[in-house]
Amino acid sequence: MAAAPDRYDSPVVDLRSVSAESLAPLLEEEIAAWRDELDWDLRASVDLVRRFVHMQALSGFALRHGREVFGYSYYVCEDSKGLVGDVYVKRQYRTVEAENALLQAALDAMWRTPGIRRVEAQLMMITSPLRRPVPHPAVFRSFPRCFMEAPLAGTARLPVKRLPGIDIHRWHPSRQEESARLIAAAYRGHVDSLINDQYRSVTGARRFLMNIVQYPGCGTFYAPASYAAADAASGELRGVSLASLVSPDVGHITQICAAASERGRGLGYELMRHSLLALAAHGRRKVSLTVTASNESAIRLYRGMGFANIRDFAAYVWDPAPPAQ
Ligand SMILES: CC(C)(COP(=O)(O)OP(=O)(O)OC[C@H]1O[C@@H](n2cnc3c(N)ncnc32)[C@H](O)[C@@H]1OP(=O)(O)O)[C@@H](O)C(=O)NCCC(=O)NCCS
Image (tube, rainbow, N blue to C red; front, top):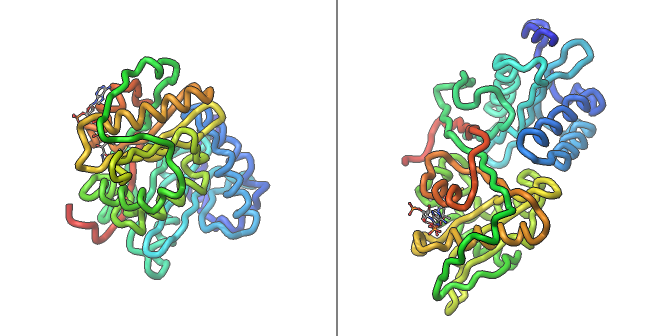
């Protein structure tokens, strides 16, 4: 195993000075890591990275050892928020110091961007996400999260929960606006709204939905396993369960929520059961999701339905003026 290069002979360089070709072996390793460790096909996301690097249009940094690029980070800024899209260092060279050099460079660049007041990151492949030094600790908070998985083989045995007055049917994009309102209400005061500020407003929830329906970051949106629960009399939306495919035979629940007035009567369970049944019926073998570790009732629901935690990770937030809890 090659020794990790000393940070003094591996200065962080602008990602725009790196060619897509020289980044390719690093990206291939990352694709393999996501496939082997999380059963997640990262190719669509990596193709976007490759395309933007080729156009010199992606903001970020790289670590080079001679001609070899062994680490990179990138970020995007949207209104007043910065998002660290990725930090990945080749396994052979991986150290907290190398990862932090990439993270620090991205954070510093974002803080220099006019209007940026907050930065978020959920980095699945970094070392010891829950116990590591992180740049800018004075304005930093970390939220433990879990990546959970369930096999779909036994899904047909999950008992039906009868819900008088509720209709469950396939989610349709015509429900997008109503879903944004439901999500903003469902996450009011919720820990996940501290992690992702899109949960704090209808405008933010609209953007969140657009991202999961149109872009590959959370897998490819999968309409056949996405469901809406509505009041049978008024037709008003009461809950949603949205699914994606993260590889040809693995589904992912990108969003599940129920209106606060409906909680605790089995609506979340039934929505999830519908999504899992649909994934199984379409030949998928497994499903995954991510959940914040302090969201105990959601985790109880998921465990009861066969999910197990396969990885602890963290949501990072840098915010000099976080909202009151
Ligand atoms: C998580 C959420 C969708 C659950 O919806 P819900 O309709 O309240 O859930 P259910 O009524 O189906 O289940 C509620 C309870 O029954 C339990 N339960 C239901 N079915 C179960 C089963 N088959 N086995 C074991 N437990 C079960 C759940 O663990 C939960 O326990 P609690 O009473 O201690 O909270 C809902 O609370 C919500 O919208 N929360 C805010 C948004 C959120 O946190 N989303 C998840 C993000 S990952």
